[in-house]
Each structure stands twice: as C-alpha cells, then as structure tokens.
Image (cartoon, rainbow, N blue to C red; front, side, top):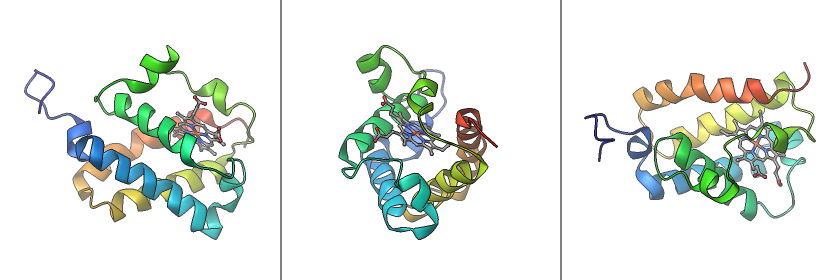
Length: 131
Ligand code: HEM
C-alpha cells in the first residue's frame, strides 16, 4: 500500500496493524522483563494493557497509518501525559533500548530500523524533563 504519492508508508514497512501490535507488545514485554528498564517500568501501572493500546494508537498515526490516537483524543501532543514522570537521559535511553530490541525481535529490517531510530530518539529527547 502507498500514500498515493508512490511511497510506501512506514506503517506498511513495519507490517501494518499486525506488525505494529507485535512490536508494541514486545516493547512492553521487554520493559517488563528487563532489569535495565526497571525505573521506567516502575512509572507504569501494574496492568500494561491500557498503555499498550495507547502506544499502538499513537504509533499507528505517527507511522502514516490510521490516526487512531488523534481521533480518540483530538490531539497528538503527548508532552502533557509525560510531565508527571521524571524523564532524564537514563529513562530516554531505557525507552530507546526497549524499542530497538523490540524492532529487532519482530524482524524489522535494518534499513527500516535505521530510518526510525533518529525520529524516535528525538521524541524521547523532547519528552525529557530533566538531565
Ligand atoms: C522518553 C522515554 C519515555 C518514558 C519514560 C515514557 C513513559 C510513559 C509513562 C510512564 C506513561 C504513562 C503510562 C500509564 O498511563 O500507565 C506514558 C504514556 C504514553 N507514552 Fe510514553 N514514555 C516515553 C517515551 C515515549 C515515546 C517516544 C512515545 C511515542 C513515540 C510515547 C508515547 C506515549 C503515549 C501515547 C502515552 C499515553 C498518553 C495518554 O495517556 O494518552 N512515550 N509514557
């Protein structure tokens, strides 16, 4: 599928809805199991189900697929949602490590991973509210 301009959407490159759901599930499973991500895991509720759905919805639109998060919330601004949490370089790097591993585990190609890495890092760094 393309966006009409002859370009394949990143959403398709990660496997569409099914692929993206697998990535998000894997991302939170890694966060849940990996001791190195313990401090960001602790910021989340015991039940990761709701946040799994929200991140899936957000990334769906961000990758050029259905804009599920903005349709539901009327916004794509996630800064406010992160303000209550102390996010510094360590937390940013933990988030990125979980996501990089999830993308590898879900078989996303090195080219697509390289394409997503910098923009994902930029969002994480933007959400940082301390050193
Ligand atoms: C920088 C590291 C990050 C940390 C430590 C972090 C942590 C969190 C936490 C603790 C929550 C609340 C979870 C809950 O309600 O149980 C949250 C919500 C959320 N995060 Fe992050 N996050 C980070 C980066 C990101 C990035 C890069 C994205 C998007 C690509 C993202 C997307 C979201 C979304 C969509 C929500 C739900 C917001 C809502 O309530 O509508 N986060 N995050």
